[in-house]
Image 1 (cartoon, rainbow, N blue to C red):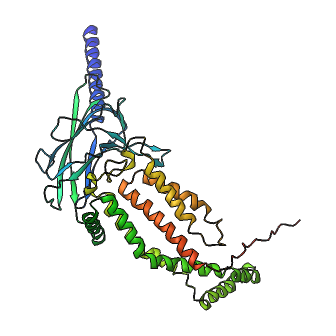
Image 2: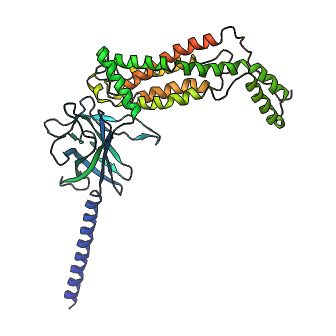
Length: 415
């Protein structure tokens, strides 16, 4: 009886252990099967499209990715109204540096010999990929077919991720399918109008880079009255600085702040100087700048338009070879700096804007690394044309104006 009882206990113990191992094994395999793929893209007519695929997991797991592929568009096993953007390969996002700045993505070549695009992820993730609630992002770059009229509507896209479980040593492949949409919608009137102008200029000069140069020059000529108004207001205020300095000396106490403000506003009114006339031109031009960004940065006809060292105007500097990657960002930064230093009025206190004088060119140069060559070219030309325009306008407005001496604040410390 004792032997039978002990055998039963042993069997029960083995059964419990087996069940526990089974549960642990199943749970270990299932954690990596909780991947969620989010697929989305959006564009307007004649634009390149970034089909963004985000891979997330509810728990922190490690997987060995094999392949990511597009399976179908609108149920058909081809790209339909779209084609691959040959000028830019697949992008795999880099991790943020110190959790703040995200560097440019790694560019991964597409696998050859397939009807639909796919990317081999083994080379990109040789040590596997750790998934959590922070998504991993992979972008397929598509463009719209130029040999057909593309309908502006949502297009269903089906993708598949193939991977192996890092814990599973058998190498069994697991697949996760997901569906999303590329939403093609029309643009507002202003970006479409800018593209229409670019196309008319292209018909005239047969070169998109020259068309952008002519567009930039034309916009600067059209906005010249606004620029003159802006700097006239600044120069008029600068001419009043000696009188404002006297008012500050007359009302030095904080208790006299209200009286000082009233006297200052009266001085501006008596000399027909408006505080808002300097900001108004910027407010008028800002919608145009936004429309230009939309119209130029992602325009698919630029895909076949080479520019000097760049195979296409639509390519960002980050996609170029290392030897030419930083040419346009440096040009953008230098031109922005020239525009900044030519905007100073003689006698103007530069201490408050000194940091912006150096910081903004560096920031715009950093952004230009991800801009298309077309947009970076426009910005560099705009800055250089603005610098020349500012120099002439300020020189004309300040002709014969005495340069006021900078106000030196008296020290309040006791000797």
